[in-house]
Image (cartoon, rainbow, N blue to C red; front, side):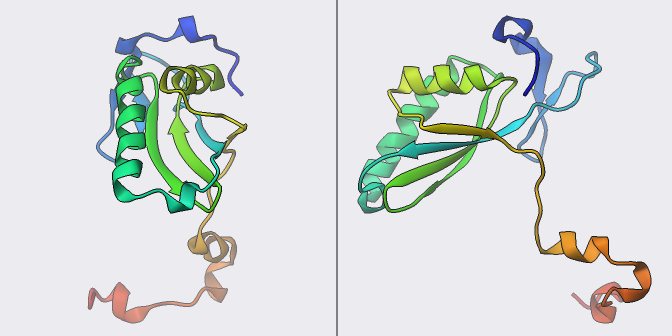
Length: 141
């Protein structure tokens, strides 16, 4: 977790990147903001109608506007009785304040320390052991 406090950050500290992530203003010499997974217990979340999900989204977006670029909601995953949300923010406290303003529960916040996907295993192999997709390398698709 970052050693910064909420007051260390201002709206001008960040600019939006085209990939949808936040980056520091070029004047700052710090790493990108951390990404967090938020677990929200919400009974029957998986049974919410599209209109109810839209209302939840709207409520979140309304609360986010008060933070400017200090916090970004990336996406959420709705399951049976929980919603898992992905946020980018300077510190965990900003996410808790967003939840308070929106009236959302927060049961757990975990900072993402690494992101892996199927390509991660391939990158770990020596070049000689990697399977090559010659058609892709030739530009067929």
